[in-house]
Amino acid sequence: MANKALITAVSSHNNKSKTAELCNELKFLATTANFEVVETVIQNREHIDPAYYIGKGKLEYIKRLTSSGDISYLIALDDLSPTQKSEMEKALGITVMDRTGLILKIFANNATTKEGKMEVELAQLRYSLPTMKGKGKKLSNLGGGIGTRGPGEKKLEIDKRNAQKRISHLRETLKKLRKENTTMRKRRMENSIPVVSLVGYTNAGKTSLMNEITGSDLQTEDKLFSTLETRVRRAALPDGKKILISDTVGFIRELPHELMASFKSTLEEVSFSDLLFVVLDASDLNIDEKFKTVEETLKEIGADNINRFIILNKIDLCTNTRIKELENKYSDAVFVSALRRFNIQEMLKKAQKYFNKNKEVFRIKIPMHKLSKFLQYRERLTVLEEKYTNNVAYLTYRTDKELQKHLLTRL
Ligand SMILES: Nc1nc2c(ncn2[C@@H]2O[C@H](COP(=O)(O)OP(=O)(O)OP(=O)(O)O)[C@@H](O)[C@H]2O)c(=O)[nH]1
Ligand SMILES: [Mg+2]
Image 1 (tube, rainbow, N blue to C red):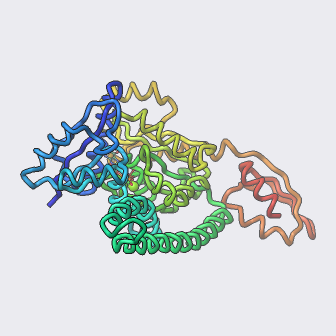
Image 2: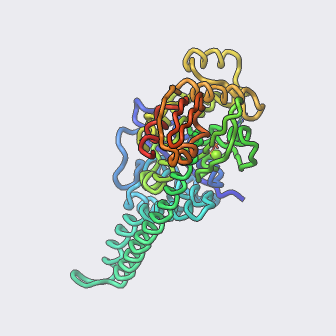
């Protein structure tokens, strides 16, 4: 059975609609984490209370709501300081968490691979270290007089030291794993099949599209962050040319920085793509805001220089008027529905056109003993003319500039 929870937020006068929208998303996050949200309590005030986050009056109100005993969690929209969290817990007698804590919980629930699990654990430790400090202060006061070390402090110091040790260990292990990933990525480049990545806000339908394109059966859910790992599958463009499609963790506004740091390398995979499909949920009324978050995240992970096409998914949920409105705003987008298998080929044709358009004709003269090296790249080039003498090959081919640059460094 789902745990009952309340949501609370502080909203300044000119921020009401944004707060309401963020609370809606917080509710979706809470549901994903298996909470049943009973009520959302919004406090209107200009500043956050340093001790209790919300004001005394609202705190009393929440206390009355929770007094029956069946609501055992309070989730705050903003990040709470260790003091705020502990003061609120003391006053209310229930568990208090913030948005970051909630997202971390979801990531912890959803991580399946060894790497994903380690990334989440690292983020959790980074998140809880400052809280340990806060408790340490208080317990040491209980433990003894000035200048002496209380038993509480000793234990907390050990906990903290252990946490720090574990952080270093996780960092090291992840570093090694990432080296392996880099090698895999290099190999992929050498195979020289273009990589197209599906990116976008969480729950936009990236994995559903991946399944449609590649005939895979990856798990999709009406939940946030069902995908936490990057997965790469083979696919073919309408003209038969092979590509690799990659699906990865979804973006969200204000992704906790602990998670951003831990998942950076997973997200950075995207920056090695040849092309991006930016997937947006066309039925989402906050689509513009979400698009903005996607653009910002792409910048943060160094993928903003890659060519991208906007894919507006879930159009089965849109009225004609809505579609018209979106056509005006996102004039270059491809309208698709993963659910109805609508227009998936159009999406791929767009990629095909892009890969063909950005190709140029090059001529090269290479010694025969280097020919096999050159032919490693044949998937990504079309040979137009070839002439061989005893020890030299003259080749004319069409390929993209990027690959040509890469090729020249290899030959
Ligand atoms: N109506 C409708 N629902 C869709 C469509 N595409 C995906 N969905 C639903 O949207 C939800 C999210 O789909 P996913 O494919 O898991 O989305 P995602 O972008 O991979 O999400 P995360 O991995 O959580 O970031 C699921 O319930 C899908 O069934 C569509 O075209 N139409
Ligand atoms: Mg997914």
